[in-house]
Amino acid sequence: MSITQQLQQATQQAVKAIYNIELPLTQIAINATKPEFEGDYTIVLFAFVKQLKQNPDAVGNALGTYLTTHHNNICVSYNLIKGFLNITIADSYWLNLIATAANNENYGKWNTANNKVMVEYSSPNTNKPLHLGHLRNNFVGWSTAEILKFAGNDVVKTCVVNDRGVHICKSMLAWQKFGNGATPSSTNTKGDKLVGDYYVRFENALKAESEPIIAAIESGNVSHVIASEQAKATQLFQKLQDATLTPDKQAEVKAAIKEIARNSTAIMQEVRQMLIDWEAGKTEVIELWKTMNQWVYDGFDVTYKTIGSDFDTTYYESNTYLLGKDLVEQGLAKGVFFTKEDGSVWIDLTADGLDEKLVRRKDGTSVYITQDIGLAELKQQQYGCNESIYVVGDEQNYHFKVLKLICQKLGLPSADGIYHLSYGMVELPSGKMKSREGTVVDADDLVAEMIAIAEAKTKELGKVDDFTTAELQALYHMIGLGALKFFLLRVDPKKKIIFNPEESIEMQGFTGPFIQYTHARIKSILRKAGDAVTTNIDNTLLPLEKALAVQLETFPTVIREAAQEHDPSKIAHFAFALAQTFNSFYAQHSISNAESDAKKALRLQLATLTATTLKNAMHMLGIQVPERM
Image (cartoon, rainbow, N blue to C red; front, top):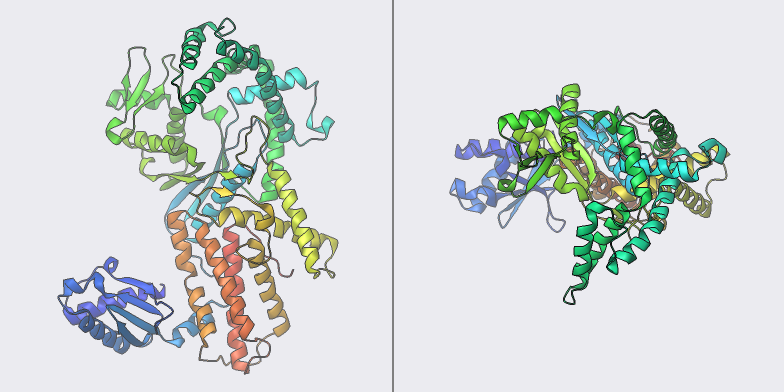
């Protein structure tokens, strides 16, 4: 139990004893005392003094007296300032914490609870390699899962691979047209990159074919447009002639014309036919699909191993895209869904502040939301999780609102546990990345660049002469990948990130390498200091020793908060603040040359616990910390 929880319970007990009133713990706010006031923790009296019908000063003095009398093992003194009761915590409390936790390698970890959570992340397409955006997804997902584990949950990590559809057929068709039998081994190219190259090749060919059609439509000629779209193309051309059209509306019209033109190209017709052939099980199409997907999986495996992502279960869309059809029938029977005149099936969510949503096309085929409903039910049947977390970009916010609502209206057991961990996009200083144009930042290339920067900066410090070549390579990888992960995790997932590689790898400031360096520094101090020569521990705490102990005590609470809010940035901020506090402490207080053996023993415990805490915090971010650097 944290010190704040103990103070809450002690305050509740005091109110009961003095005023005979049962005060809910939720009404008792405990905050860290502001630096300008004496004390460690502050009890906010305004939340409950009206209920007690007493003057705030009278309540404060009564509570302060009770706490320092009946809980003097924790509360040694108090002061009262304008409705705030400031409590000073006994040094013995912090000393006992340090002594108890110093040799606990699992410090911060909560006991296992009966809560089962599924975290779904990564969810790549098999038409391109992982890129910078996927890295944030993987890091947020993996870290969230590890934090939940540390907070005492039973966690299942899952990945859904989008391995079918038009986008996959684009790479396949381009390989048929332009590949000349190329394979990863014959071209010495990583499989996912090879397939991704053909996706870009397809888009380039599609652009070349569509540009003349776009020009024709914009001049009023729709003869090259597929028959089903000619009327719409003519309407768009007419809109384009409207002199009152705003620039934004004009851009919308041109975007619609571009889409019609793309759909009217011969190469796009070939892709659609390939998808039809795949769904029909045409042998040569299925074999090509299996071959190229395996190239991609082999490539993904290398990347996942490099960045440290792993999954307990992987679902493939090719196996799940037909799920949910029976649920549509159940929904119709329950009156949750309704059928329109054309035979398509919908749900009306206007009363929930949304709109009508298609769940089955008029030709009887499923849409993405239907598949997701079916997969949610399958996951629940297989694992029975209390919560199912989807780590997906914020462009899908609406989709997941709809998914949860539909599952709730269908009465599925999985419904209330659905949680969309929405995260903002990662952009470069130069702007957004675009897969179609091949302007994304490849994950493998970025990791390699980060490792190279780490090597250069580490050599600048000139402290690695006694490392072997293998040790150096491991260190560069640890620092480079740690910098990348920390930079992408230190920000609240909901916020957008502008990624700057050079900034992320600085050895000072709010970076992963700063924390890694602090850990290595502590381990070096501990090696040089050796074991304490006395079993006596100093029983007083200097201000910076106490500040470090107070911060260390909050670690389990920070973990629980990060788990509840699904926010790894809370762990990143804690680790950085702890590293700063230790460095401030060590700048003023020697460990090896402490004032006494008892003080040295105390500081060795503090340093040991700090190193363990930093290691555990960084582990939850997927970051290793070196023993030396």
